[in-house]
Length: 97
Image (cartoon, rainbow, N blue to C red; front, top):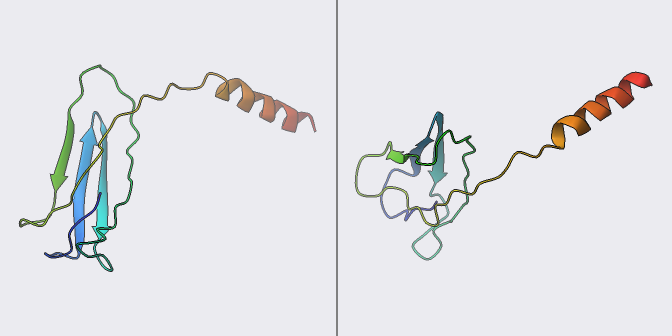
């Protein structure tokens, strides 16, 4: 996300929601200008319960100078099956000491 600081407010607010996950993001335009918009990457982690999902973006700011979004994507990441057994092994080793 980024923003052209030509218009207020200085701190922009955005809500991103998908499924039961929702998160508010802020962006401070201080120090940025039209040649350096201050692009920053944000992420929202969620667990999908269906193949069709509604992704929503809602600005809390009034006026024409809202946030700019680019390269919005959803990347599937399978849950690793080795995490639970490895975690149990660490607990078992620590308990034996």
